[in-house]
Amino acid sequence: DTEVTQTPKHLVMGMTNKKSLKCEQHMGHRAMYWYKQKAKKPPELMFVYSYEKLSINESVPSRFSPECPNSSLLNLHLHALQPEDSALYLCASSQLPGTGVDSPLHFGNGTRLTVT
Amino acid sequence: GQNIDQPTEMTATEGAIVQINCTYQTSGFNGLFWYQQHAGEAPTFLSYNVLDGLEEKGRFSSFLSRSKGYSYLLLKELQMKDSASYLCATSGNTGKLIFGQGTTLQVKP
Image (tube, rainbow over all chains, first blue to last red; front, side, top):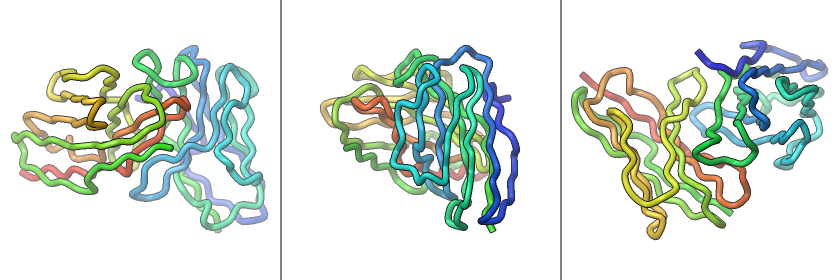
């Protein structure tokens, strides 16, 4: 069982829709991440939140808008997506920002997004 | 920048030993991670090396040579459930965890 919970598990949306992906962790972790993963490819980093502030944006298009309402929650707001944005979107958290032996990433099971 | 290389696919027999290699080039070094990902599931943390040498954790061991930019994951007594993708990852000095392409391991009876 994963300690990082993502909803929904599956999402189908049109290119004109607005939807949100949600992620929740109750491990007291202070860093949260969004990754995008295409089939048979590794996860690609999108955003990093450190102590609830956006610390890294990997040049992600503005149609993806992250939000961190509090230390346990992370959202990804989606608007005007393209079919090529279809992918598995993974949320992760770590105890501290940065990575190390004390701070491996814990991943949620992801949201499988299909843009039609 | 960061560059990570690992084989795309490997096949091994149940009960055998398999070694998955990973070479990397990073600006700075903050550790080498191995993750396991079963199809349709989240990656799960397997091991972390920051110093040279071998770290053993049950059937899985991970080795690091910083001077060679090289790591391997060793899986012993392979089981069918070990069929998965194995991802090598480093963070360099950016604090961002970057993954290699992953090695898909197929364990056959």
